[in-house]
Image (cartoon, rainbow, N blue to C red; front, side, top):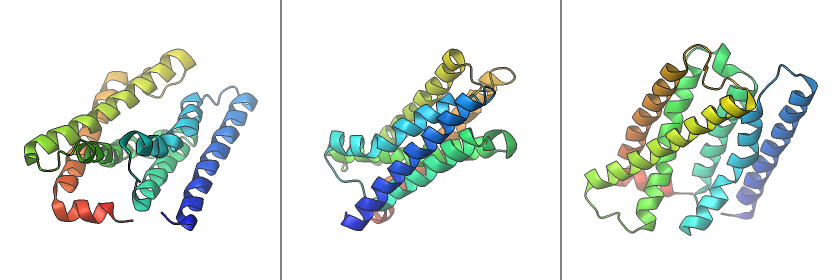
Length: 195
Protein backbone atom coordinates (compact mmCIF):
# COMPACT_ATOMS: atom_id res chain seq x y z
CA UNK A 1 0.00 0.00 0.00
CA UNK A 2 1.45 3.35 -0.98
CA UNK A 3 1.98 6.28 1.39
CA UNK A 4 -1.20 8.14 0.37
CA UNK A 5 -3.43 5.11 0.94
CA UNK A 6 -1.73 4.37 4.28
CA UNK A 7 -2.25 8.00 5.35
CA UNK A 8 -5.93 7.80 4.39
CA UNK A 9 -6.42 4.62 6.46
CA UNK A 10 -4.71 6.21 9.47
CA UNK A 11 -6.88 9.33 9.07
CA UNK A 12 -10.00 7.19 8.97
CA UNK A 13 -8.98 5.43 12.20
CA UNK A 14 -8.37 8.80 13.85
CA UNK A 15 -11.85 9.93 12.75
CA UNK A 16 -13.38 6.86 14.42
CA UNK A 17 -11.57 7.73 17.65
CA UNK A 18 -12.81 11.33 17.43
CA UNK A 19 -16.40 10.15 16.80
CA UNK A 20 -16.17 7.75 19.75
CA UNK A 21 -14.92 10.57 22.00
CA UNK A 22 -17.73 12.87 20.82
CA UNK A 23 -20.33 10.18 21.50
CA UNK A 24 -18.73 9.56 24.90
CA UNK A 25 -19.08 13.27 25.72
CA UNK A 26 -22.73 13.06 24.62
CA UNK A 27 -23.21 10.18 27.09
CA UNK A 28 -21.75 12.36 29.88
CA UNK A 29 -23.92 15.36 28.96
CA UNK A 30 -27.20 13.54 28.30
CA UNK A 31 -28.08 10.73 30.74
CA UNK A 32 -30.73 9.43 28.30
CA UNK A 33 -28.13 8.93 25.56
CA UNK A 34 -26.86 5.48 26.54
CA UNK A 35 -24.70 4.43 23.59
CA UNK A 36 -21.82 2.71 25.38
CA UNK A 37 -21.82 -0.13 22.86
CA UNK A 38 -21.21 2.26 19.98
CA UNK A 39 -18.43 4.04 21.87
CA UNK A 40 -16.66 0.81 22.85
CA UNK A 41 -16.99 -0.67 19.35
CA UNK A 42 -15.86 2.64 17.81
CA UNK A 43 -12.70 2.57 19.91
CA UNK A 44 -11.83 -1.07 19.19
CA UNK A 45 -13.12 -2.19 15.80
CA UNK A 46 -11.12 0.30 13.67
CA UNK A 47 -7.96 -1.50 14.80
CA UNK A 48 -9.04 -4.99 13.71
CA UNK A 49 -7.46 -4.83 10.21
CA UNK A 50 -3.87 -4.28 11.47
CA UNK A 51 -4.38 -6.96 14.15
CA UNK A 52 -5.78 -9.28 11.51
CA UNK A 53 -2.82 -8.54 9.19
CA UNK A 54 -0.37 -9.26 12.01
CA UNK A 55 -2.06 -12.56 12.96
CA UNK A 56 -2.32 -13.84 9.39
CA UNK A 57 0.97 -12.29 8.21
CA UNK A 58 -0.32 -10.53 5.10
CA UNK A 59 -1.27 -7.07 3.86
CA UNK A 60 -5.00 -6.47 3.51
CA UNK A 61 -5.84 -4.80 0.19
CA UNK A 62 -6.71 -1.11 0.43
CA UNK A 63 -10.15 -1.57 -1.17
CA UNK A 64 -11.15 -4.18 1.42
CA UNK A 65 -9.97 -1.97 4.29
CA UNK A 66 -11.88 0.98 2.84
CA UNK A 67 -15.01 -1.15 2.48
CA UNK A 68 -14.62 -2.28 6.10
CA UNK A 69 -14.39 1.31 7.38
CA UNK A 70 -17.39 2.41 5.32
CA UNK A 71 -19.32 -0.49 6.83
CA UNK A 72 -18.19 0.46 10.35
CA UNK A 73 -19.31 4.04 9.84
CA UNK A 74 -22.75 2.90 8.67
CA UNK A 75 -23.15 0.25 11.38
CA UNK A 76 -21.67 2.08 14.38
CA UNK A 77 -21.83 5.81 13.90
CA UNK A 78 -25.00 5.99 11.84
CA UNK A 79 -26.73 2.88 13.16
CA UNK A 80 -25.98 2.85 16.88
CA UNK A 81 -24.94 6.37 17.77
CA UNK A 82 -27.35 8.25 15.47
CA UNK A 83 -30.19 5.73 16.07
CA UNK A 84 -30.81 4.73 12.45
CA UNK A 85 -31.50 1.20 13.67
CA UNK A 86 -34.63 2.56 15.32
CA UNK A 87 -35.65 5.15 12.73
CA UNK A 88 -34.96 3.50 9.34
CA UNK A 89 -37.03 0.37 8.57
CA UNK A 90 -34.92 -2.78 8.04
CA UNK A 91 -31.66 -0.87 8.55
CA UNK A 92 -30.61 -3.45 11.16
CA UNK A 93 -31.21 -6.43 8.86
CA UNK A 94 -29.43 -4.77 5.93
CA UNK A 95 -26.39 -4.05 8.13
CA UNK A 96 -26.33 -7.62 9.48
CA UNK A 97 -26.56 -9.00 5.94
CA UNK A 98 -23.66 -6.73 4.97
CA UNK A 99 -21.67 -7.90 7.97
CA UNK A 100 -22.19 -11.49 6.83
CA UNK A 101 -20.80 -10.67 3.39
CA UNK A 102 -17.92 -8.60 4.75
CA UNK A 103 -16.87 -11.05 7.46
CA UNK A 104 -16.35 -13.79 4.89
CA UNK A 105 -13.08 -11.97 4.18
CA UNK A 106 -11.78 -13.37 7.47
CA UNK A 107 -12.69 -16.92 6.43
CA UNK A 108 -11.14 -16.46 3.02
CA UNK A 109 -7.84 -15.22 4.45
CA UNK A 110 -7.85 -18.07 6.97
CA UNK A 111 -8.05 -20.50 4.05
CA UNK A 112 -5.20 -18.68 2.28
CA UNK A 113 -3.13 -18.58 5.49
CA UNK A 114 -3.53 -22.32 6.08
CA UNK A 115 -2.79 -23.01 2.40
CA UNK A 116 -6.16 -24.67 1.87
CA UNK A 117 -7.07 -22.93 -1.39
CA UNK A 118 -6.91 -26.22 -3.31
CA UNK A 119 -9.31 -28.03 -1.00
CA UNK A 120 -12.79 -28.96 -2.28
CA UNK A 121 -15.15 -26.02 -2.74
CA UNK A 122 -17.61 -27.49 -0.23
CA UNK A 123 -14.92 -27.47 2.48
CA UNK A 124 -13.88 -23.89 1.68
CA UNK A 125 -17.51 -22.77 1.66
CA UNK A 126 -18.17 -24.40 5.05
CA UNK A 127 -15.06 -22.81 6.56
CA UNK A 128 -15.89 -19.36 5.21
CA UNK A 129 -19.55 -19.53 6.25
CA UNK A 130 -18.61 -21.02 9.64
CA UNK A 131 -16.13 -18.25 10.45
CA UNK A 132 -18.49 -15.55 9.21
CA UNK A 133 -21.37 -16.94 11.28
CA UNK A 134 -19.09 -17.18 14.34
CA UNK A 135 -18.32 -13.47 13.95
CA UNK A 136 -22.08 -12.75 13.88
CA UNK A 137 -22.54 -14.76 17.07
CA UNK A 138 -19.68 -12.90 18.80
CA UNK A 139 -21.33 -9.60 17.85
CA UNK A 140 -24.64 -10.78 19.34
CA UNK A 141 -22.75 -11.66 22.54
CA UNK A 142 -21.37 -8.10 22.53
CA UNK A 143 -24.89 -6.67 22.13
CA UNK A 144 -26.18 -8.93 24.91
CA UNK A 145 -23.33 -7.83 27.20
CA UNK A 146 -24.03 -4.16 26.51
CA UNK A 147 -27.71 -4.72 27.30
CA UNK A 148 -27.06 -6.64 30.51
CA UNK A 149 -24.08 -4.73 31.93
CA UNK A 150 -24.41 -1.22 30.46
CA UNK A 151 -28.20 -0.89 30.52
CA UNK A 152 -28.59 -0.53 26.76
CA UNK A 153 -31.22 -1.97 24.44
CA UNK A 154 -29.07 -3.07 21.51
CA UNK A 155 -31.06 -6.30 21.17
CA UNK A 156 -34.38 -4.66 21.96
CA UNK A 157 -34.68 -7.00 24.95
CA UNK A 158 -37.72 -5.14 26.20
CA UNK A 159 -39.84 -6.17 23.24
CA UNK A 160 -38.46 -8.62 20.70
CA UNK A 161 -35.00 -9.70 21.96
CA UNK A 162 -34.92 -13.33 20.81
CA UNK A 163 -36.60 -12.59 17.48
CA UNK A 164 -34.21 -9.70 16.85
CA UNK A 165 -31.15 -11.85 17.57
CA UNK A 166 -32.35 -14.73 15.44
CA UNK A 167 -33.21 -12.49 12.48
CA UNK A 168 -29.81 -10.78 12.84
CA UNK A 169 -28.03 -14.15 12.77
CA UNK A 170 -30.14 -15.30 9.83
CA UNK A 171 -29.32 -12.13 7.87
CA UNK A 172 -25.60 -12.47 8.66
CA UNK A 173 -25.62 -16.16 7.66
CA UNK A 174 -27.31 -15.42 4.33
CA UNK A 175 -24.74 -12.69 3.74
CA UNK A 176 -21.93 -15.12 4.56
CA UNK A 177 -23.19 -17.55 1.90
CA UNK A 178 -23.03 -14.73 -0.67
CA UNK A 179 -19.53 -13.83 0.50
CA UNK A 180 -18.43 -17.49 0.43
CA UNK A 181 -19.69 -17.74 -3.15
CA UNK A 182 -17.63 -14.67 -4.04
CA UNK A 183 -14.45 -16.00 -2.43
CA UNK A 184 -14.77 -19.51 -3.87
CA UNK A 185 -15.26 -18.08 -7.37
CA UNK A 186 -11.67 -17.78 -8.70
CA UNK A 187 -12.34 -14.72 -10.89
CA UNK A 188 -14.10 -12.79 -8.14
CA UNK A 189 -11.50 -13.77 -5.52
CA UNK A 190 -8.66 -12.44 -7.70
CA UNK A 191 -10.57 -9.19 -8.29
CA UNK A 192 -11.16 -8.73 -4.55
CA UNK A 193 -7.47 -9.19 -3.79
CA UNK A 194 -6.39 -6.30 -6.02
CA UNK A 195 -5.35 -3.09 -4.28
